[in-house]
Amino acid sequence: MRKFILATAALASLAVPLAAQAYPGELRDDRREIRQETRDLNRAQLRGDPREIREQRGDLREARQEFREDRNDRHDWRDDRRGRYEGHRTEWRADRRYDAGRYYYPRGYSYRAWSVGGYVPRSYWGERYWVGRPVAYGLPYAARGLRWIRVGPDALLIRAYNGAVVRVVRGIFY
Image 1 (cartoon, rainbow, N blue to C red):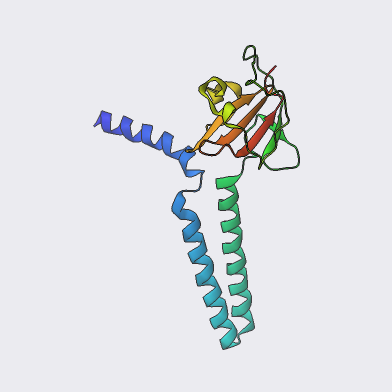
Image 2: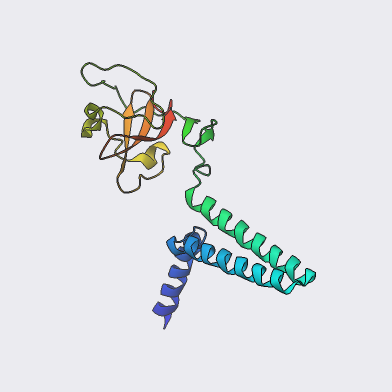
């Protein structure tokens, strides 16, 4: 019985951080709720009761707000605590700099300030330029299909199959 209680407590402590994030089906549920609230509002407008219409509009507004909050929780990069926002959602300047050793550019290349949407040449995709443990440098883990690479003093999050730059952290290395 004691093991069961301890296991339950351990699972509960893990579930709290997971509950703060939107699970994959939550956005779908929110969209479904918006559709239902829209139908309810349309029915209320057909009936013509002003009080019911006002209530249904409030319900629809709340459903839309909940959807926006869940979507932002799922896709918002601004809560990383390691950079400050620079204007474009995916370009950051690091507050802290790290010594990652001497850097050698690929043959024929020198420093270039990469921006989101650009394509990094295949020469940078090699293991030599990978950031092995991004968390050690204050970077979030890369999702499936993405990879952190070092390009001079900057860290770039690129798509592993085509080199498209998804995110830029400027001046993180010295």
